[in-house]
Amino acid sequence: MAGGKGERLMPLTEQRSKPSVPFAGTYRIVDFVLSNFINSGIQAMYVLVQYRSQSLIEHLRRAWRFGGTNRQNFITVVPPQMKGRGKWYEGTADAVYQNINLIQDFAPGLVAVFGADHIYRMDVRQMIQFHLDHEADVTVASLPVPIQTAKGFGIVEVNANHQIIGFEEKPASPKPMPDNPGMAFSSMGNYIFNAEILMKILEQDASQAGTHDFGRNIIPSLIKSNRVLAYDFMDNVVPGIHPYEEWGYWRDVGTLEAYWQANMDILGESPILDLRNVKWPILTDASVEPVASLVRSQMDDAMVGQGSLVVDSTVKRSIIGRNVRIGEGCTIEESIILDGTLIGSNCHLHRCIIDRFNIISSGTTLGDKHGRDSRRSTAGKLGLTLFPRGQSYGGRAIHSSPSSLT
Image (cartoon, rainbow, N blue to C red; front, side, top):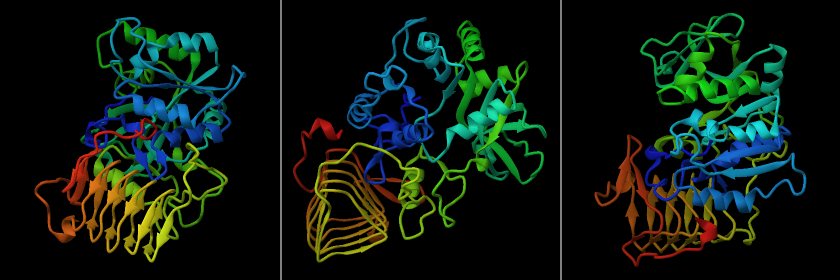
C-alpha cells in the first residue's frame, strides 16, 4: 500500500508520496518493505500507488527491475484503475478491492497486505508460519507499546490465545496485553489474509458506506465472525541483528520529527538500527557515482553518500546524500542533506532537513543552535529547519533537475 499523501511530512511530500521520500542518504522509505519481502523469499508483489506517484514509479523502475520471464516473480506498480465506483482509492481496503482481479488471476492461498511507509526489518515468513500454525483466517502484525503512549495507536485487544477480541483507533483507555498490564498491542498495519476470506470481506465492504479502511472497517468486522490473531512482532527474529540494536525496531515516520529521529537512529558505531547488516540487506538502486571525497574534513557519527564532496569542513551526526557539495569552512550538525544540494563556504547548519537540489549560499547560518530564522519553516519541539525541494537560500533558484533523481 503506497498511495498515502503523507501530509504531515510536508514539504518532503510536496512533490512525492510518503513511500518515495529519501531515507538514510541512499534509500527510499518503500525500500524497507520491499526488501523485507525479497529477503523473506516472497517475490510476487503489487505496489498500489495513488498520490504524487511519479517519483515512486521512477524509483521502482530503476531499483526494482525484477522477475524476468518468470511470471511468478514480479514487482508491478498498480495505479488506480477507476473500477467499481469509478473513483480514486477511497481507503486502503478500497485500493485492494479495485484490484481484486489481480488476486483472482494469481489465485494465491494467502495474501499479505502491508504498508509501504515504515522503517523496520521483518522476516515475513515467520508471521506466515504463525498464521498457518494457529489456523488463522487473518493475522495482524502487532507491536507492544507502553500503555502510557498507546493512545496514539490503533490498539488490538487480545485474549490469552492471541485471538483479537477488540480493536480501537487511538482509544482513550487502551486495553493492556493479557500477560503484561504495562503494555498494549498496537497494530502495525500489516496483515496476512486467507485469500477467500479477503475477497469475500472486500465485496461486503464495497457494498456499504464507510471509509473502506482495513484498520477501521475490515478488521473490526472480521473479529466478530472469524479467527483473527495478533502476531507479536517482538517474536520476529531477523538474522544479523547486533546486541546493541533495538529489538523489534519499527518506526512510523509520518511526521518530520519522527523522520528526523529515525535518520539519527542509524548513526554511530552502535546504532539502534544498523543498516550494515549483510544478512538482511535493505536493497535499493545501484549508484554509478564514485565514492565520496573528503578533503581536510572531520566526520563524527556521519554518513556521506556517493559522489559527494566535502572540503575543509566538519560534519557531526548528520546524513549527507549523494552528489552533495559542501564548501570550505562549513559546520553541519544533526542535519539531513538530500541529493544534489550545493552548500557554499562558511555555512553553519544545525538540525536542518534540506530536500534535493537546493543551493545554500556562502555564509548562511541556520538552525535553533544559531538562532531561529523566521524566513524558514520549523517543525515541533526539535526546532527543525526545513527546505522544500529545488529552492535556494540567498542564491539563484534551481529550475530543473534530472528526472532520475526526483
